[in-house]
Length: 418
Image 1 (cartoon, one colour):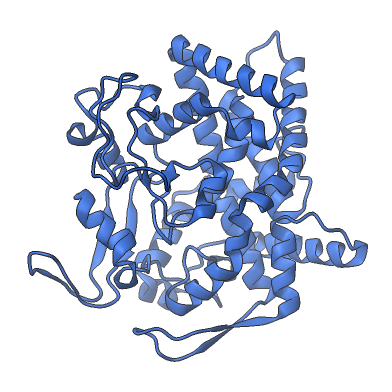
Image 2 (cartoon, one colour; image 1 turned 135 degrees about the vertical axis):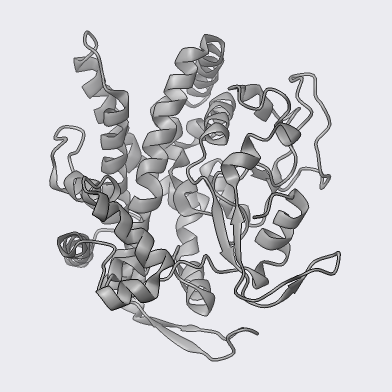
């Protein structure tokens, strides 16, 4: 287990080549949808990441904004019909997130907002909200006891779920090819890879042998599937908790409202640029994810022997655990009120952003800036009484080349809360 910010920077960024794998094993024959970017390792991960990275650029996100806007407008219309009754916010934002992901990653109008029992949501519930204990255990066995899983033929995902998401992706490709539609979204990117057919995985020091990555329909369906896995609970939980905290803290809610009104006055509507400019709403969401990060821990595996500054050695095959929840609530880094909801922690005068490793990563409203000083801690500012935020202690999506793609969904999260 690693908690030291300095060592975390070495493992996750500076010496990433020694720790580039998550260590979650999968069998693509048994579970083809598990062959997504998060689970891939070595040169296959590197090749796939390079091909998928364009989806996170500002231009690509901006082109998907109209899809998100239409779904948000439907949500607002639905809320207006329920203005005189109680609303289960957690359920509502879950359905909103399903519609956004279905549209952007699968080219599908799932209709979950209007129909909570739609097929897309039922399939998602089967995976992420299993009703049986055995269904909850199977993915853990597949990930941490792969030899036992292979021996017993345990699949992480039910066969009907695999078939459903593979067919949805294939139909999206067929529709785009037939109609000639170009939306510049994630489906278009996958379709480009399908037409290309394959890619060469260049060798590295640890894997000198070149490999060929074939873009089959199942492999591409797996990449759409991880958008659901990384985005659904991430979006719905962050939205619901942010609304909860703002309800409990009227002063934060009022400041966020002023931020939204200012953006709307400047841009005329709550579009992509307006959403990006809502600074205080950023702070509210960031503080929510500090207290309740999407993933409680990060996992890495040492892929070749590594020597620490003090001479100690981390041997190849050693598993590394980063306790994100513990770090983000540690009074050593966040002060004596580490468990309190204080969005002002993230005001620029008090904030030490994490170092930026790819300029495109800031497109989704992340807290990574290139123009900040490279000091370990920001100085105390007038806008806050906190000591500043220590570098590498705010990791809701991880950091470095294997930063979680769940960060992509910060844009719909912000627009919903706006």
